[in-house]
Amino acid sequence: MIRGLTGRSLRSIAGLFLISRILILFAGYVGTNLFAAYTEPPVYIQQGPGVVPERAMKLPFDLSDTRWPNEKDFAKFDSFAYFDIAVHGYDRYRIEEPHPPANWVFFPLYPLVLRAAAALTGLFGLTSLTIVGSLLSNVFFFAALLYVFGICRQQNLDESQTRAVLVLMLLYPTSLFYSLPYTESLFLLLSAASLYYSSDKRYALAFIAAGLSTVTRVPGVMNLFFVAGMVLLNERFPLTKRHLRLASYGLLSLLPIGLYLLFMKIRTGDWLAPFHEQSSWYRQTALPFTNYAHYFQKPYFMAPGGWDNGLLAFVMSTAVILVYLGFLILRGKELIREPRQLLLWVYGALLIVIPFSSQPFYLASVVRYMMVCIPFYLYTVRLTTSRDNARFAYKMLFAVIHIITVIGFFNDYYFMA
Image 1 (tube, rainbow, N blue to C red):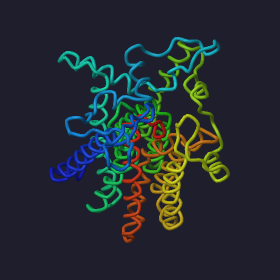
Image 2: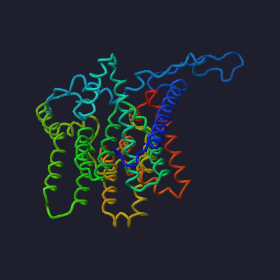
Image 3: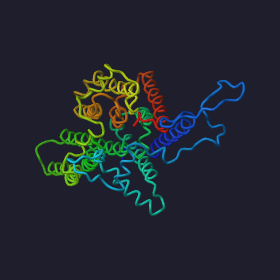
Image 4: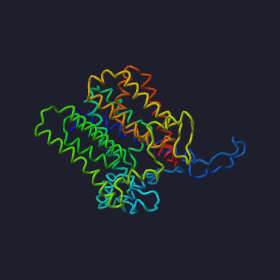
């Protein structure tokens, strides 16, 4: 299915995947027992005579006293909304009547898949949505890595460069969310499949993946944009029956989002309820990068309610923007000469612009939203191929913030959500 994927390559990717997920669990386990939770006051005890300091936070003494991760450590924040949709469906308010924040903003594909998977596993006694959702997300993520491998080969990256791309994706500061009951892993899988199949001229599969991505997350429309762009660049005139078939693929790919918006019209009275309801979740459309520019005017460490660590978000945002602009400046002539590469750059740029257009003041969730931008990883590796220190700096930056994010997540902090 994926050209160039050998048994050796598959084992290598599986090894990277397992190592990263095991070490994430290890970091969460140690962090949970070593640091205080954000939502609970720590317990301080009087130390024994002669012990310095006299008072200190109570920590486990024996290994048997430590707390092991459990289900509640993996289901937080948006996960509960997807669980609710999977079990009860969408809220039954009308858009014009007063109502609390409705779950319409959460797109339907992930909860639908979760509901179906839970029904299947329930036959074998596994009913926990947290466990089923986490298993699903890990399967989606691993499959996505296989497609990213294929994309790297399409982009003529060698074995070491391909491995570097995968390592950067696994190290990315919010990579933890690929293994949680969140939509990121499914969206990454569908995005990678869209890019891979359209570049391989298997347009039916590309349009299917892109169409499904539109009912996974808002930026799914960018996948349709890329696939349609590849069709236009690859297919020549005059028009033939093949062009009509491709056009029908494109129209059919609009069916998932069309059905979802039709359902929203029936349920809420508003075709665009998922977008209009964003304001109830403290999201509002803003000029791109308004929140990033705002940070220069009013730098902050923590946003109100603890929902965003401004310093970490700003540093990561800057790291991503530098790579993207750097690639445009240093490889701009290549992009102009090869329209398909320019299309890929524009596609990735739009995936970066969207997170910076959803809030005018804070950088909440921007780091997590950007992690599905596959071109960013490709460009980071290309720009640092002969710049070892630069690549090391990005790996270290990712790893350090990743550990902070994992410990924060397991200790109920909100800033990484």
